[in-house]
Image 1 (cartoon, helix red, strand yellow):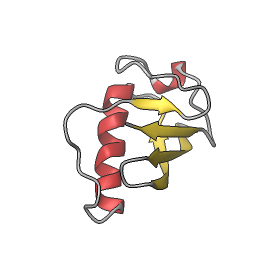
Image 2 (cartoon, one colour):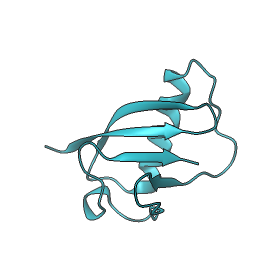
Image 3 (cartoon, rainbow, N blue to C red):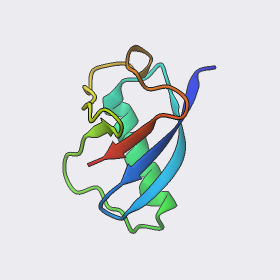
Image 4 (tube, one colour):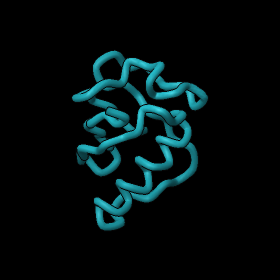
Length: 83
């Protein structure tokens, strides 16, 4: 499978979303995809305001923008946080 299902929590709007993300893309692109998806899913309640990071909710690890998802610890069911 070339995608993983993750839960992304957005503290700014106190919402969590389940999203499929491709494993063969860099985190920098994944952040853009997630950000745009959350804007749409939240009916515009979330707006991208500058730079944000993607964190592992369990370990607090910050993901490097240049890392490919497949080379990280992001797997099916992973809980992430967008700050």
